[in-house]
Structure formats: structure tokens, C-alpha cells
Image (cartoon, rainbow, N blue to C red; front, side, top):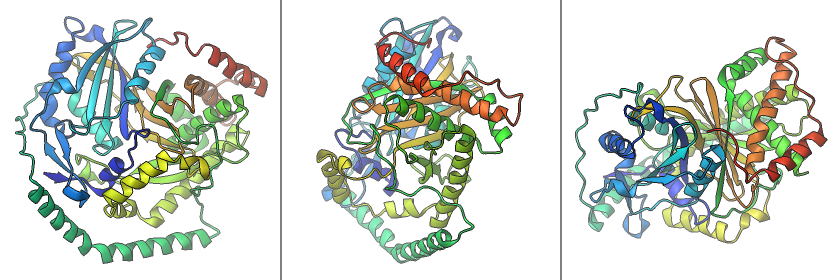
Length: 499
């Protein structure tokens, strides 16, 4: 029996019928590297073999009576792999758009809390002898770093696989109400013992932040509740739409070096240019810059294998009000430096420490009330969207002998911010996953298709400093952008790119 941390439990409390708090990934595999060809039973056997290595896949929740404290994890005594691993046929012609449509349907369904909080779908029938693998895990069980750890356990470094020696983990008995309440009471006592220290640390953090704000020499990030409203900043519905994009990692690094910025700044600039193109096509680009929340890992080296969430967040400007791409990326770089300084002033663990005090009943009721009353439509957005950047492996991964050729991560959305962009590097590429509320972003492939234009714009800007980076692209006028978006809408239902 292991109690969820306050941060882990908060993702449970934030979940509503419209806001599903699971993270997901859509991977594409080349079945031609599998010895003897594709077989679903081999994939299922691989997952079954490695379950002892992946705690989030074995454990289920048990609520504390009267919601006296955060829930606990136990080894599921009734675990059945068939409840979690599924197979489905991809509609023809089996390209990325058809795969994304299925991924959106899968992401639209909440996870069953009576079982371990994950599901995996093998998508058969993709082009070029490939298959898809969509896995979703509740955010209460993993963050980006923990998700990467799961990848290392499930996947191999070669098509030959590896020997897995893992002792089966015995199931636990379901604790009684008395056991749960006794354990919760002891946890509460330890929590109250740190209350005075937490208040003291928080006061010092606030003083540090205020002192920094008053310092004219210091840079600052964006401020919550100053984001402009866009079409995707409204109350959400349960339906999800998904799209994918990809950019070459070596070109992204060349731009970073030419402009003397961080790799994450270039990623944010690509997202900013993409959003500008999309919103211009809708005639809905705000005069004020969009604001993104960027999750920040606070995981220490000795917590590398610890499950659950070790994250904080920083607010940064996307400078979408700046026309010039070179000026835009420099503005973003300045904002991210300031956001990091603000984050450090507050303290990396302040958010996670205060999350321990989240009251289950009050927090959950407030989240459901906020969602059901569509209150996100009645105030200025806290932020416009979440953009996550997760470092992935620079080497190929295999599952049951099949080579992974692409991995598109997908993060959750929430009321008031119906769009999420999650980015992961894999081998020579950066894979970008878009997740959105279908009602707010019905034309999500217009966003994905705008990535190439945004990156070409940035490469051209970097080429003015380092001419070896890129040739100048054809000028992109506002008229051309409108026409491109309109054409994308007309072709939204047609089969698209190669998987």
C-alpha cells in the first residue's frame, strides 16, 4: 500500500466528465523487422512478461473512507491483461490521419478507476507493413520522466530483444476501512508536522519573487490570468482530436546554435509560428501574446526511477504578437529565462509541497462545479495552452522485434485551455503531438500542417546569421495563409500523409 502524493492525487481531483487527466502516446512500428512478421500475440506476450517492471501497470486505486486523505495504490488482486491490451483495425488507407482519428477516439474515453489506470491499443492495417500502438496512462501515475522510464522497460534496444528476469509481484489484499483510516491518520500527522516549515519556506519564496519583480535588472516570465482569449480558450467537451507533425532534430539544433538560444526556445518558437498561422487563418490572432504553461521536472538524480509526478510549471510568453520571426524567438528566449528565474525564486518544490494539502472532497467538487457551470467562459484565460517538451532516446527502440519509427506524445487538456502541444525527440527527429477539444479545434490538422511553414520561417531567420542553415522560403503572405488554412479544411476528411 502506497499513498499517492498530493501532486499525483491532484490530477485525480481535477478530472471531470469533460476533462480526462490521462497522458498518451501514439507510436508507429515497422513490422518488417519482426522475426516471422507481425503477430498480435507476440506484442501481448511482451507486455505480460514486463508487467513486473512497470508498477503503474499493476496497481489500482483504493479510496480512503470519507475521502479523509489521498487515495493509495495497491497491487491489483484481480488484474486481467485482457482488460488493458486491445487490437483494432485502422480504416483505409492506413495513413497518419486515419491513425490520428483512432487515437482521438481512444483519448476521448476516460480510464476505469476500478482497474489499473492504463490502456493500450494495437492498431493494425497501417501502410507499408506498419502498425500503431496507442497507450494512455493516467497523469496521477506518471509524468514525462516516469513515462520515459516505462518506455525503457517495455521496449528493447535491438530487434532480437532481451532476457527479462523479473520476479512476479504478488497481489495485495484490499485494505479494510480501518487500515485505510489508520494509515491516513499517520500520514496526516506527518504532514501537520511540516506545516510550520512549509509556511516559512513559502513566505521566503514570496519575498524572493516580489524582490525579483522590483529588480529592474531581472527578466520575468509571463503572468497568469493575462492571456488573451482565442477560439480554443473556452469550456471543453469530452471529444478529442489528434494530429501529428515532425521536424528534423539536426536542423533544429543548427538554428539553436546560430541564434544562441536554448533548444526549448526553438521548440516554443515553432509552436508560436504555428499558432500564428492557424489563428490568422481564422482571423482570430490576438493583439496580445499567447501565454504557454511549460511543465518543469523537479526530479533529482536519485529520483530517476521513482514513479509518479515530480513536476512544477513556468509561464512563458509565445510572442505571437511579433511579426518578425527573429525578434519573436529572441523575445521567447528572454521570457523563458525570466520564467526560470521566477520559478527558482518561488522554489522548485513549493507547488508539490502545497499539493499535499489538497482536500479531496473540496478540490474534486470545485473542479466538477467549475466544469459543469462552464465558468472558463466567464473570465480571462489563466493561460492559452500547455506545451511540454520531453527528451526522448537518440537511438532506435523495438517492441517484440518491431522497430519504432515515430512516437507522438499527447498531453491532457482542461477547461479554459482546450489545446495541448507535446513534443518528444526521438532519434533524428522531433515528434510533435497535438491534442485538442474537437468542438474548439475542429480543424486540428491545419495546426499540424502549419508546423513546416513555421519552421521554415525560423530557419530563414537563422539563415541571416548563418547562411549555411537554409535558403529563403517563398514569402508567406496573409492571403496565402488564409488560402492554405481554407484548403486544409476542405481536405480535412481526406486521407493524408504516409504513416
